[in-house]
Length: 441
Image (cartoon, rainbow, N blue to C red):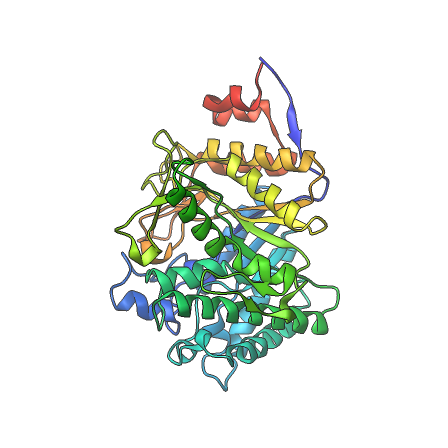
């Protein structure tokens, strides 16, 4: 039986990722809270993981005990700026305490400034559709970066702007003021402008900071390559969803299905690129899907599927995502800022982690500049419109008792973090079914 270890570079960041609304609990002043109360989600976030009540301490302990040297979390705009003219200094101090807690545990923080949620005062004015959102976001960014810079120099301005814009303004799964492709692209353009303003503001406040954003990237293939319609739908969906932000930050022009938009101030406003990868899509023409521009998507029939069929285990897609980023931005450091799978009984997660990290190792072995990996997530959390139906945590959560439930993947990921690599012994112990794929004879 082959034996060996796939090692990662010295100083590689090993962490998990979370987001404020999904873990804090009792966030009652943002658009998602109202969305939940109006019945648009399967469940309500409620207490979530009770981080606002202080249980971040025990979860950070678990991360540290598991060998993690980094953690990505977000700050909640609605807590920090509850009205347009007020700042909550107590809320800011809570985030400072969390950051001190990470440092005390030897964990490097990566802080996201916008992760899907907006204060109600902003949402009620349809903020992301208005031009003054750029100044409003910059004002918030200046306040919180100035308050937290003592503890943070790795910033993520906006998480998955493409998911925020398409999920709300095109598909209607997220809270949004308007619906349609035109407002979707308007919001995307405003998010690019807001990111650029935040980038420059952060560097004025903290010149040594590293500033980027997290892109949800979906590799896509046409279901029938011989079909011109399937290929057309694949190209429209791929470019519309994946390319808006990257095109603006590389050229100053946002590519859009309804016309390109000049945003020259965005060019070059990233010190790293965060890649959120979960799966890859097969796309085809579907005359019944007018809301999605007559395109549909799914997974191969024989795919290794997650609990609710939400994610297919397609690890090669992560390698292809990194490859795309390297060719798009040859000199830019990359961070896998999210990667994970919903899996309540932990039957799929071990091999999902192993196979995806093997693809990251392949990329690193080409000397491609991947600097870290953040698994989604540390503990089960509230999964937006899907509520509590999906369990992404290394640690499980009983939402009635707040008890954390240890899954086998906790020990597996801990072994990887502590070794700074994946060994044949780990694979044999935690996911022997993929041993021959990772360590072929």
